[in-house]
Length: 319
Image (cartoon, rainbow, N blue to C red; front, top):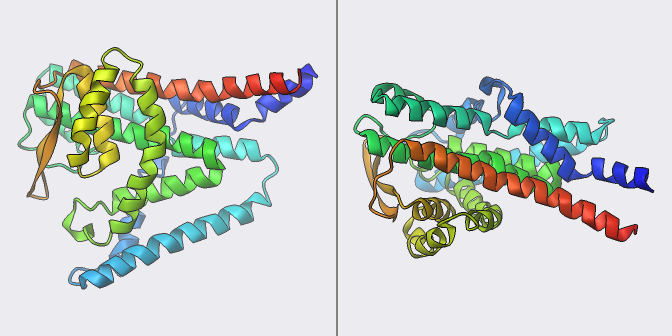
């Protein structure tokens, strides 16, 4: 019986996820091999059906049909491939290892924090350029800190925690579908004029699918000191944010640390006057590491809890 229970635990999705997370944290793939870094082909594909000067209705139609086609092709490919896979669990671990992204984000955040502490603003802007679409030339030290916290926090949530959530809830098909939707949303970002109408569908889908994993992450974030205060502040402010789920996450972080996030920004010389989140205190560089560390620990809680619950369930079932 003990051997049977052990085999059941090892074969569980929670163990597959835990192995993949550990591999990604300690033995990360080069970023050039990661799917979110290889999204240029999505922009090239969109350029064939969303050319400048097309009517708005045609842009929206193309932006609806192309994602549906790509998701359908992905699912057909996965179903066909599943018949050829001898060890499904190993396949799922490798796919999660390939898709999930936290190591590069943590290293980038740490490097930017070190550069800002040395007042090397231009070097910090150069690294931040890979994380954010904002115009960074006019950003001073505190606003570079704010931009880094926002970008790293949202990418950790989307590229790391949400991938794990959808894997545990819907399996590897759901995790890969989320990753593809997220890649399309980031490649066809509506903050850029060219994709404002074309990217509407994927942006709406991603925003809706962010809420279920965000609920779990909020639970663990409120356990920290200042977490309940941050949650209370976020509830009053997040509705004004362009993406409510993102605004809620950033609002909790800003409120719990007692700092300010959000505010005025520029995309392709276009002014975007977004509301501020949290308090009026501008963050210092050390907050980059503090916020990143809190998100990592909060995420790890939900990687371990499913495994413990599954073990308890098996013990109760075969007692």
